[in-house]
Image (cartoon, rainbow, N blue to C red):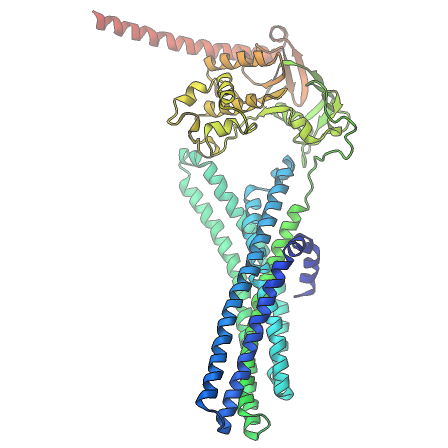
Length: 608
């Protein structure tokens, strides 16, 4: 292992050290079995020496050869059993270690905030829990076994070779420096190339994920051919990078084999001369050749182990980098004696917010107070409506003294304390590949079926659900693909209503509803607003007209606020939006009237 590799190993060893400590008894038993196998393998050449020397001296009999053969057979059987033991124990340890690190990565990702998830793609995270973990598992499993086995076997074999003849041993090991130098050079290149492979695998995974999620859009625009070409390009880059890794690995194995064969050549030439000259016996020569053949595997293993170790270190470094990332949003170290806020309310004081890596504030000097009731928020696209909702739900950090929840600064409250009191429905309804019942009960898995039905009725989705093939047990597919946009929105709304939290934030999540359904949902909000704080982001005048007050945002600032009727009399933007939607509704009614007239005319003709 190179010095840079050792340095990286020291940096990331803390990630795997707990696993080695936790399963140390398993590892000790496994390595004991491995040493037993190596010891038994080293006995066989000594038995061969006895047999060959006996034959050469004419002392061997059928009985002695049979006894030696039975000893060799017994040794092989015991070695086979111990080989199974170390594989089960040590390779099994690597799988347990892989599981523990995967659980740690998953738990860490769940604690991270929105900026982290915006920086790391799904494909990148999937690459960490698949390819990277596989490389770690290989390095800590079969790689560790091979390294330990090579060390024990090479040390023992060299000791036995030295016992037979020191000069011949030195001649056999003469080519070893060539392997050491070449391994050092090639493994340094392997790190950078394998790191590139992992990054490209993350890109490939993210491309596939994005394509599958957007498959309907791809088909709608007939972009299958373009997607196929782009995927092929990424695949070719990934293959080229893998070939470069294989190129380095392909040099390591032949070099190790070459060194082993050069050593064998030295032994055959000089050892044969020593045997002819009588410096060593014929049995010693056979035993020496056998020990050297055992040494060839450790020589070959050096290249393989170096490759596995380098790949494992690279992947461990990538995983450690991911796990060392800390969220921008952190729980306060001291929450005071009473961490629970008061009644549901928000108070914003000169709140200004800029997204990480952003250049301009998304919100500027927002000051307002929201208490129980239904509050509407509207404004042009990009005015900061969704940003405000994300800050209220605590997705991004805010400055001290700018945002209060229940009368307390949110930065003095644990994140869980705030989020546990807020039901949130975002612009995109997020559903899981599960049943409708499980999707609605996501926030309250212990909820009774009657409560789930009541929430579905409040969200005006119950009638749709019972029309499904299996009712509430119907599987909606990944991301709710089998449902319409309006159905997905109402299932997500039912989930938020079932959570029964004192604050309900609806971020433009009713845009796909028809007018009739919109009226029913609005009545549910009006009833809910008596007991909770409801914040409704919408561009629909009909929804906003039923609120207790409307806030209009413009370029991240509060442009106006007031009752629906007051804004309708004084705010230009609100008037334009009202007039436009009124014309659209009138057009729909006019379009429906002739159709109804035509239906009536045809009905009359049929009656005549």
